Length: 338
Image (cartoon, rainbow, N blue to C red; front, side):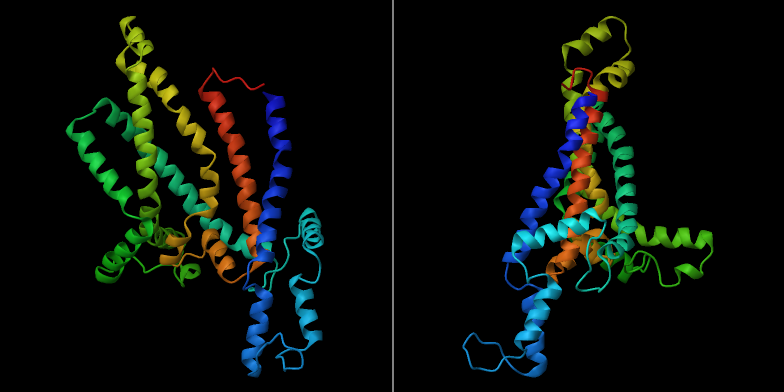
């Protein structure tokens, strides 16, 4: 098993290089990049226009254009620019943001804890609620509890998180004024005492967390319920009960362990969701998190931030897949890594 995971870890660097090469090439190919935007803004300020015909006036000179290309890193061929960027990454430098005019890591680390908070809370509540609920639904299949909970779960799953967020804001924040309109914390957060800070954070977190949780509830609950029902109908469970094992022990010690295999398989992918979150939900609730940062960077053509977000998200996904393999090996003794 150790050799297997060492090989998996050694595959992370070349995989990251492959992903970043593709994204880096796309940022250089797509039109409307930062260079074009800078030229357009300069033309608008000067009242001129750019033309490809010789002899006509341009808003910026050739020297200014060359300086812009050098500033944005477009003065070198694609491969050379990529290896220059990769060399900076190896030195721990993610570059400087075009929009914020500060190091990319400083831009990311300010938003990372926000998405980490929502991601960890969402993940914790999802498994704490969905696993017991799935057990009850599997045991009480086709009863009132199962039918009512299924209706609620499917109703919530059918409503997109961003649409639900808009409705929650309209009713609970605007109409009833029970919760704040958005943001991670209030403007006066630092002036509050410890209890006041906790209450302020909870008040700002309730509505976004409902939107985060509503989508994952259906997936985890129904996935676990269906596998648990299949295992409860298996011969080894009937044999265990026939040998004197109580039904509760058969569910918890035998059927439950095998039913957790698909949950363990997808657990590692949640690591990316922990930090990336949902940019639509963050946009609606005005949460300045990691997901919204990635969306804003794409829209603003802030390519250093885009590359930083892609690098971190890809690295977390690869590490998450390894964690999933470890969890599967712990849950399923039949799995042997060669």
